[in-house]
Image (tube, rainbow, N blue to C red; front, side, top):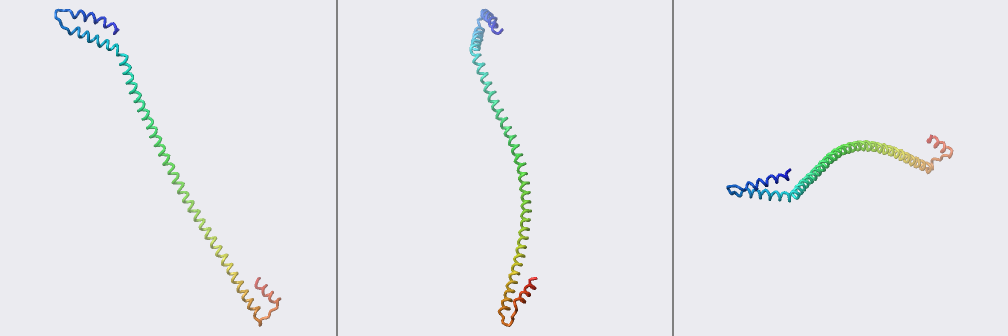
Length: 168
């Protein structure tokens, strides 16, 4: 329909230029419209392509920005999840550390008690050993003095009886 509009305008412009008054505005207007019509017809594909390319580049940039925004939101959410997980792990580690401290206290207290018991037992054994040792030395010294003393003469059978009485 637009293509045929020029067919109706051309005769009007031609006949309108003839008149008593000679104004050249109508032919100039006709030439202007004709010039821009031809210019539009020749450049419309280029202008449409440029316009569409511009729209596509803006849309692509907008898509890139939206993708970056989605990625940054996803990273933010992941970071929040990581922080929460780290908090939970920190609490768990703190509880484990506290329980290990308590366990270590109990073990060290038990170990200390056992060490003290062992030391007391060793002390008692050492005391008993030293007591026996001193007793043996005293007995050996007394026997030595008795055997070396010329005034005391004991027979071997009497000596064995005395020793047996002391032992039992």
